[in-house]
Image (cartoon, rainbow, N blue to C red):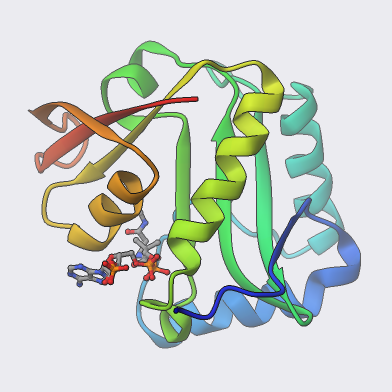
Length: 176
Ligand SMILES: CC(C)(COP(=O)(O)OP(=O)(O)OC[C@H]1O[C@@H](n2cnc3c(N)ncnc32)[C@H](O)[C@@H]1OP(=O)(O)O)[C@@H](O)C(=O)NCCC(=O)NCCS
């Protein structure tokens, strides 16, 4: 049995600044620039960063063409283990390649079941929002992400070439 006890999803808050910055630091150290599921790029002013995430969850101050999206942090004993972003609806781009949910787990905690467990919890949030099925996409060369999706009931719809990266992407649907 993998380690998954004592984890919970929480909404971004200023009180967890140190824990979140530690999460980001681990990505920099691992030379992973982009943090999937973080919702918004980190700002120098952590309060502003959190307020933006809170606004986007409520559909306030959204950039042009964005839909409301909730960001969650997976917390265990005060540490942020993962982050995930749940788009409340699909735009043309999200339907084609972005999907409803993005996520990442901190490099040192991968392979312990946290990614699968986090997406399971985020799917509950999607259900609470009233979504009946959820689209999740991943690069074809990302087997860990494909496993996370399949373990959560994802059924492969199709594969296509990303207009953004030129890489092959897989599109999965999960019935809620
Ligand atoms: C994708 C990601 C979130 C997975 O998180 P995780 O916590 O390692 O996932 P889990 O531990 O739940 O693993 C899920 C499954 O993938 C498998 N897996 C992990 N790494 C793998 C790899 N490199 N190749 C094949 N399978 C792999 C695991 O073995 C596990 O299957 P198992 O339970 O049968 O052993 C994590 O690798 C990550 O943050 N990657 C960078 C960001 C990213 O790619 N996000 C997704 C964008 S679509």
